[in-house]
Length: 61
Image 1 (cartoon, rainbow, N blue to C red):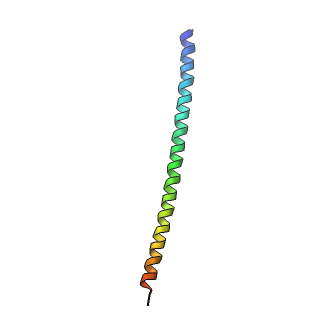
Image 2 (image 1 turned 90 degrees about the vertical axis):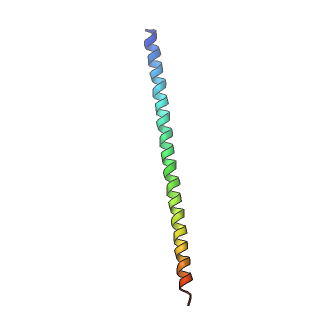
């Protein structure tokens, strides 16, 4: 009887730890997505400015 109670307590603790780990992994994935999207936006802005600079450089008469 005592071992059954201990087993149930350990199962509860393990399930809690698994839930915490899954939540942390989800947070890491969402953070990586946010960082990746912001880097893509910044890179797109720099490419746009670079192309504008080339157009203005070569369009001088």
